[in-house]
Length: 191
Image (tube, rainbow, N blue to C red; front, side, top):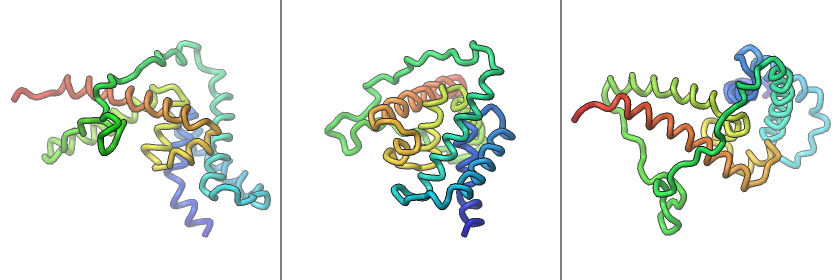
């Protein structure tokens, strides 16, 4: 059973840890330390949340501590970022739409081999975009959009309010979308 959990959650845990620390090696160490903490504290698990939420909470705490320790070696300029990036409200569906608050236009499909190559390039670009986000936005978008956690799980894992989670997620999605749009404008083919 434990081996199954390791196999099932390993990639997701690495992605979450990576959003707090600066290298893949550090993320692997964080995940390893998390599993050691889980094994050591399993008797204290009270069942007030799911096992996954409990493990991810330990992961976030471990990664956060490691990230703080690593941040002491970075220059202050590395933390500067305009936190005011917000998408144009006209791009969202209104309250009377089937999916209120969602984006009005979906991204175009990539049906060609060229499109598949572009998709791989865009995945790399998304990874780069995530790396430029402030840590709190990065972890929220990673948990929600990459790991598929519910908003309630994210709030519990990160110990934040639902409103804060929505704001962080919105800002992160808007920043990623802005970067992707500027990229697509630069590679737009003449019709």
